[in-house]
Each structure stands twice: as C-alpha cells, then as structure tokens.
Length: 310
Image 1 (tube, rainbow, N blue to C red):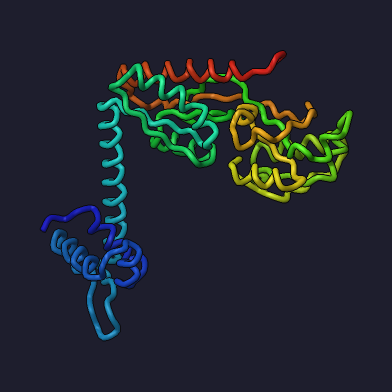
Image 2: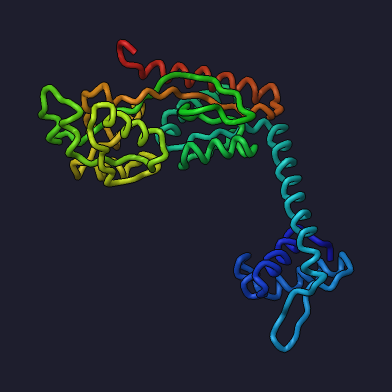
C-alpha cells in the first residue's frame, strides 16, 4: 500500500509520546491504524522504527534518527498542499476575507451581497468571530487575501494598507445608569465605576488607562475582560453599572441599540479602519476587480456613518 502523509504524522505522534495508545487517541483512530501506518513507513524507507518487547512497544534508535527527516517531510508536504490549495483558489476566482468580529461581518454583509450579485462567477470565503490579531496573522501566513481591521499600529509585513475611514470607540452604559443623570459630566464622575474592556495589552485598554492618567485619576478597575464586543458583553452592561467601549458602527446593531453613549470626548478613541491586502497574492483580474469594489464600498459605508463635524 502506498505511503500517505497521515502515515508520517502517526509515526511522529508515536515518537513524541512513546505510546501507541496516546498516538491513536491524539488522531482519534484505532491503535491498529497507527501500527499499520508505521509499518508502511518502515516498508517504504527500509527501516525498523519500532519494536515490541515484554514492556510494550518502543521506538528504535533508527526511529529516533528518522524523526527530523519525518518532520521535514510532514511540514514540507503540508506547505506544498497549502500552496496548491491557494493556486486552485486563485484560478477558481476565490477571495478569502477576514472580518474579525460579528459586527464588522454584519456591516460588510450588504457590501459583499451586492458585489456577489453583480459578479456571479466570484466565490468568497469569510473568516469571522475572532480577534484582529488572529486575522492579521492569517494574512501574514497566507491564509487570507484581505481583511477589514482597525489600524492601531504598523501594517503587518507583506501587506498593503488601504485606509477606508474612521470608526472610533465610544463609552456606553445602560440607559438608566446614574452617569446619565450627571450634567455636565466629567471624567472624575466616571472614576467610581468599573469597566468591561479587552486584555491589558489591547489598544482600547491602553487608551483608557492613559485617559485617566492624563487627568491625574487612578487607573480604572476592569471588572469584565473580553477580547471583542458581543451580545454577551452588552447583556452584562445592560444589567450592571459597568462602562464599556463600543465602536461607533456598532451602535447600529440591535444588541446595543438601547445603550447610551457618555458625552465625554476625552474618552472617544480615534480609530482608523483599513483594508489590509496581502502583497504576495497573484490575483486574477476578477479577484482584483472584486477587491477594488470591496474597498470602495466599505469606504462609502463608513462615510455614511460619520457624525456631523467629523
């Protein structure tokens, strides 16, 4: 029987754990499947990779020496499969777009629907429900062609950056929050209330700490940490006195429609939004036309959300 990539992977799992049972469990297959795979590897390369004795099955010295070569075979073949898949996608007119959170995906859905309606031959693959950092890494790794993300820092390597508009973060609370009765409202009034925001390293959290520090106020308490805003986070805000950042575009979503923006310009976080496009992509003309239309449509959408004076 011919050797396949899974055979090498089964051997590497056995070499890593030293146990056929654990190797089988990690791949969710029967132990006999792992044994047969290793036998095929042995037959193909003319090596004895494992032996049985009274204590069970163990890897041989030749097997240990073969591990680096097996790792190279596995990773090299996986890379080749990835490249071939990408080439097939390009030839078929597939474009892979990252829309990290559900809010951006919702706003972009109308744009993508309109573009697909006018380009029936196009195919679009969406990745959503993840963090901005995850999407940016996927771009760098060649798993995505483009993404709609906030532009907090330097553009990832090997990506072109096309700024398409502004989508600032604004602080919101429940409609009957005590802060909504303060006129005028100051940042010091917000000091007693805890927040829901992202992990400490995220841009919104750093901005929040800096805003309070600039006015000589102590660092705000983070009672709820979330990587991105969701219906769950909004539901918590609705039931507590917590304060939370949301993007201006998010205010059009039903699950935050009843939350109120605090009138505190010092807590409005400037946030440009960009379409990142992977430089190394060898696009077909239909893919390139779709990309240009997507950028134009997203820019028009964000311009329509601008408030007077912005």
